[in-house]
Length: 375
Image (cartoon, rainbow, N blue to C red; front, top):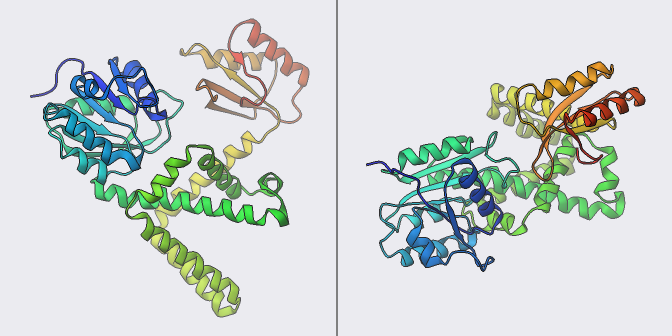
């Protein structure tokens, strides 16, 4: 028997960043009522009331607390969770899924492969789905996945955690180690700001990842390393690769160069395969072109308040009317989450014509011109 009606959503960890995003998603995109509990929010629903009333219970809590919190809710539910649905959105899956399975609820583990986005859905992002015990809630979960609009990948919890040791733990560790090397070299070459004028596209991408990691909640990145049982093995393997490379470079002989070519270039190229190499190289070039466009000093960002067909065309017509040529145009989001178009120009753009274009956009209320730096 399928679930009917509009289930009440309960979020454990409702005051956290993902808890807040999920609340907006369930309310705005699915039209559902949401209640939540979080120790940081004194006005939130009590745990006993949450587990009693929520039809769908979502655990959005730190990795290190996941098992204990789910166990507490299982005890509070005392069997009343039978016929309901329990979900979690943590970055590991074996522990939360196994712990939820000790309840009588149906169980699905979710892992959105992104921090809470500024967008209202996960469009363009990956979400891993671990179906552990799913029957009468299957159709509703399908509707949830459809509404999230993510690229959905199904996996077993053990498989998920092993892959995350590579996709998350290894990647984060590599960039944190790079940040440590930069910190150690600062006395000789200066800080990151002093190094960036010498950047390659690759360094700029790596620096962006370092900044991203170090800008967000440090507890998340700590838990991804210490909470994944496979992370230690992967980090040791990574260390062995770097140690081997350093040894060959330190040797410096022709034989060492030959080993470097064989082990780190030829063998890795063969292992990746031609198709993956071509696709990855193309992705790199696209990102490189994007970075080059965004580095242009002459640019204008415009938010289109009316999301309707033809609004972008009307905006572009203004540039044509004032004979202002565009060198690039990209859609993005402001820190507040508003969609805007960043329009780039050649350095030789006529400043007066560009100003007339801006005045025209504002006067005709075609869009809101964002302050310089918001792009």
